[in-house]
Structure formats: structure tokens, C-alpha cells
Length: 336
Image 1 (cartoon, helix red, strand yellow):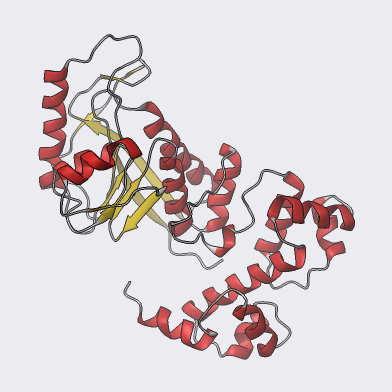
Image 2 (cartoon, helix red, strand yellow):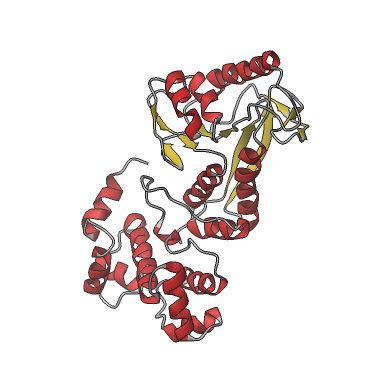
């Protein structure tokens, strides 16, 4: 994998009244584990809000919440949690106080969010962004029960239903509750690399999901939508060295299974053959080389593990509409 320079990303998690606890715990657990898996990118998480103490959706009190900061660093991430209509064990919320607290968040968002900030909404947190006018001109999504409300609050936004998450420039939004985990895995895959996202997903025992209308996952994540340890061991080995001349016997030794058993497990759990997976990883590596280097096609093919440029082009054609040279040109011309 081609990785970037080390950096620290300030992350401000905004906690509204009646914070839906899973909207916070799930996505931030992804960042915590990502920090432990690698050192290239560190996510520095702080919890902020209009109140120092709040009740979460499940009745657990959250304390030690910092005030909403007067100014955010230029590269800050701001995560907006959703909230519940009522708290477990409570008959009704104090609507007047809670409405005032939400108003303070909206007012803060209007002045705090500037170009360069990444605004990330989880579930109904998108409603706060919509009220602040920060989704105008952007595509976005939210919990299915809130889509109509979001469209009314932000008529200039493009509200997309039936999506796990939506990324539109510096605005990222997820659908209901656990989709926030999917969005954060997507962010980790983009910033740190798919291998880290896969490791975090396996730790959390969640799938790298994709809805039918969602953008394609990174090719490094294909075939990983399972929890079988033998297949993952083989996939980890190939992903670490795609250009190696892998035989079925070699991979079987790495995975601790017989060649026949590994082949069957691959087809059953990864929905592809071992050979197909190896070729996908080589094509993924070749794609990175095309975008990050000036190597000619013969050298790209060699470094990606193909026997010749012709073999590389044949494998590439199975997964891409554009030939390699045109794909490289489109990457070079794409805006940063």
C-alpha cells in the first residue's frame, strides 16, 4: 500500500441533549482501534457540547463534556451525533431546555464551520447541520425516519434515501445508528488505508457493508465481507505482498489449511476463487502505481506481479471500463 505522511487529526464530537449513545460509541470505537492499528494518522478525539453533563439515550449520564470551542483548527473533523426523542427510564424530555441547547449547537455551527473542516453527521445529527445551512448545495442522508424532516429543513440540499452514507466534498453523512460505523470505516479506509479498516472491522465483528446505490468499496476491501479466520489469513498474506508469485499451496500454508479446503472456503466466504482474489489485489496495486508514479506499463505490470504488460491489461479489463493509460490520465486530471 502507498501511505501518506504522519499527521494528527483533531476530531470534535458534538453531543446534543439525549445523545443516541450508539451514534457516538460505534464510530469513535472505530477511531480508537484505528489509532492502535497504525501510527501514520492519529485521531485526537474531544467531546464538546452546550452542557457539561447530559443524559444519553439509554439513561447513562455523560460528563466531562467540554464547551463548544470558539475556534476550530483548519483541518478539524466535526462529528454531529444524533439523539433520541426520549431517554430510557424518563417519561418525557424537558423540551424547552433541550431545544435551547440544540439552538446553541446550530448557532455555533454557523460560525465555527469553515472551508477545510470536514462535517460528519451521524443519523439525525444531519438535522442540526441542515438547520445551520451547512448542507445547502450538498448531497446528504440521514435516518430513514428523518429524511422528510431534513428535506424540509434544508430545501437546497439533495437528501438521498436508502443510502448507508454519503460523501460530498467536505460533508459526510450516514443513515441510522450503525451506519455511522460504516461511515467511519470508510473514512479510515480513505485516510489510513483499507488494510487498517479491514482490521478494525474484524475487531468489531462488523461487515464492510455497501448499499446497492453506494459508491464501490476500495478494491482492497473486496471479498472481505465475512468473518472466517482461515480465509482472512490468506487474504492478509496476499494483500501484504500482491506481487508475490502465490500458489494455492503457498497460501494454504499461510492460512493453516489444505489447498482443497482453502479453495472451498474462498468460494464459500469470499464469493470468488483464490486466483481471482490474487488478481484483484494485483490490479488494485497496479491502480495505485498508475496514479502515484510515472512508471510505464511494463514496469507497472512487473511491480504488480503480472508476467507481462499484456497479461496486466487482460486482468485490468475484467474490472475497469477504461484501459490503464486512460485511467491514469483521468486520475492525474482529477481535482485533489
